[in-house]
Picture (spheres, rainbow, N blue to C red):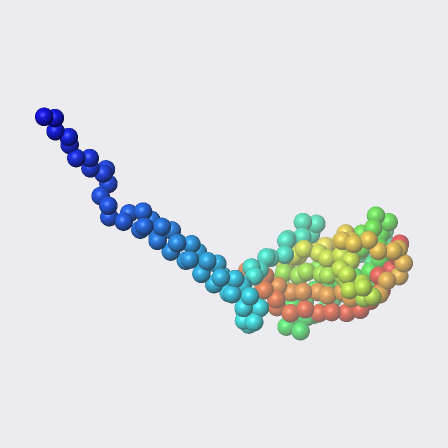
Length: 186
């Protein structure tokens, strides 16, 4: 008589497959809840008083030169000193002219003792578009001219010039000054 051995399953019947199915369903439900939570958080950030956006510092102006601009017979310009409301001083050409190459003569000067970065922005009054802007101008430097960001006709254009002062460490605003003038053609 030959004895047959009883066949035994390799794995014990402990409901392993059912446990895998339940765990998978639980993971899917948790992922959906998490995604919904992120969606709700993103929709409500518009109503909170603080912003989740990262602040990106304006770039340093690479065309800035050390010192103060000198008025010479070959390059005359009208130049004035100004002061922002918080005591930060700056110098700038009071009459803005477009040059033959399209740049705008500005002579934005940041004195050595200002304690702030300066930035200049020129906007077309009619359209509100930015014509030109400088990068950050460090203490003791000046920028001779700005290259236009957008094309504009070579004609007298009413513009708004804004000078911003920024903290040396974090570049947060220390104040600004705005004035209207006419950008003169070539």
